[in-house]
Image (tube, rainbow, N blue to C red; front, side, top):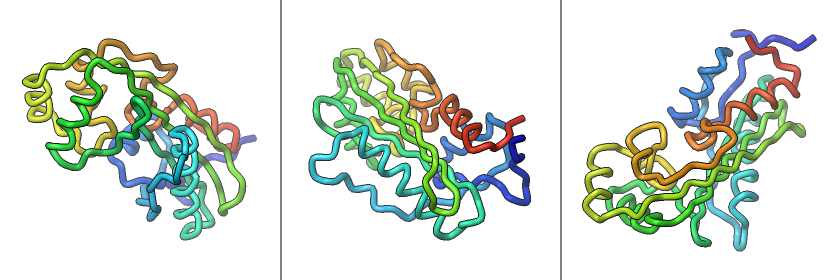
Length: 198
């Protein structure tokens, strides 16, 4: 019989991302969020899927060391296009540059998650989404970055907002993965761990 997640022993989301917290709330389970202190720099020659998986585990283990009594959920997303990794732009100029780079191309978003307890071996999953961008004119890129703040989003766009207008197609098995936390995979790893869901 799965052990319910209670407010006495909640799940901890190892992230300061408001997007991931909003997504996890959809599963209607109690949790608290704690930003993970982790170096997110890629290793030399590291593939984007391996990078996202490594960082998801790194974040989870960083929080697990502080809260060994709780289940910890770590997640990370990496955007890759044409051999380049596109992280969170941070500034308007970098967002414009990223969208120019993505114009007319296909980007792949790797969204990984790791669930663990007491820094022991846990459960992991990887969601892959392919986004084909329309050929974007310079003025519409400028209008977009002025209309919607996506400076904290890999690839500089929000598929759940106005960013959908930049896309020609999205190929995904889980639309929540592109937003930052694949809920289908999250439910599966929670069930694997024996944690009850509503």
